[in-house]
Length: 243
Image (tube, rainbow, N blue to C red; front, side, top):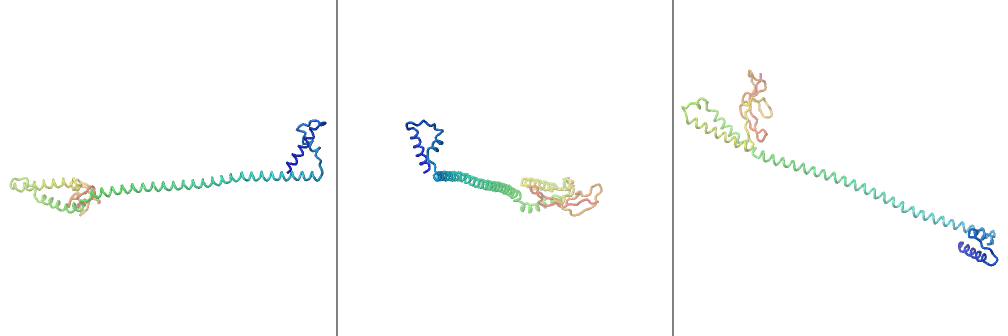
């Protein structure tokens, strides 16, 4: 309304200014000229100023609303950015957790494979353990039979049949021990090798002093020992020097 009244007044002033007898007024001087031409009463002036104040207030409210409207999207964007950041951190934690579980599962699976391989290999290596334990008794009896023949009777020609029998038994023992060795079963004699007493593979039956020998040395084998693929199948029963 104010704008329309101002526009009508300006048009009337402009039209009157272009009437005959009036001089041309520059554009810059229109406000002063209009103020002088338009009759100003106190009531009209106050009303005009109040209308201007209300218009300025409305403009301020509109600008404030616009600024508030402009600020809301910024706040919304900040809140959405915060939510996205939280979601990203949550996904990163889930990825780290899943990666840790994956690595643990892979390690457990590899450990299971290695343990299974060792168990399978141990089953193959010691599948004959019970059979070999029973077989060593027969090997001991064969060894005792060979040991019962005195060496002087084997060197003489008085009994060639005994020599032939002994040689046949000795050959049988050698073939048997070679066959057992192919399957991991080996016999050992600590006294022949001159070993020191080892409680892991030897069983001390007695101790006795021996001149010229160190303490703890095995000097007599009462029963030979057997090893199955590096594991003690039967400890050797020995006599140990104790000076």
